[in-house]
Length: 329
Image (cartoon, rainbow, N blue to C red; front, side, top):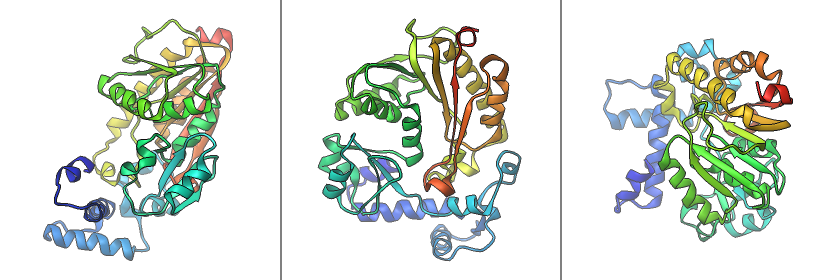
């Protein structure tokens, strides 16, 4: 949507925000809207529901989700609320960035900010200078949970476009080395552009399809597997995804997640940690994955980041501290 709106030069930023808000409202309230009405009328209905939500929110999610997630009123309310804009400032620069941007409130972890203004943050000189990233607060918490130290060697096994890699590098003070892998070269290309803007240089990127043949023989002080998932934890931010995801998709993703962890774990140094994170709340992709790996990897420490509590995306984190015999099994 951002690309489409940006290409329409006749639409100014304020109008673009209004269009985006209307589209997301449409998908938030999709099952309340009369499909026989005209599109403009449907959009007005959705915006009215944004302003005056009904007391019963059960229609906000598909029925099958009850088999995967504990559907509470608090969770549904979080899904039907406009998502907050979270910023991650560079290390120890949160307060100074808040003064520059204005309309910021300090977040729950160091250098996190909630932005409450209306300007296009991507066009600000501070963004172009690499002073901050737009990153959901739950994703920031995953990076903090990794707790990498300067000089260590880490593997971001499913690096994507590099959001968490940039945070790991910042926490490592741009020292040590991070291997970044992904199955898609275009995502690694975007990572390269983002890293250049942020002046992150302590990384190497390489293609990896998730198979048993690893991209390097390096042994790591830590491995982050931010695996492909159903994205149920992002349904407030991506309401259209509620109506395209299927239980079959989740079943296939579960097997992929187990495979990724099994193949990556042997690259860990003895007594170090592998961190598995997913932006989903589905049992199949969280507790069932942990259970499937119990005999091989042992019992991990688990953390749930619930959107109704963090005011961000929902995420699950599992951390295994690998013993020598298990890491090599």
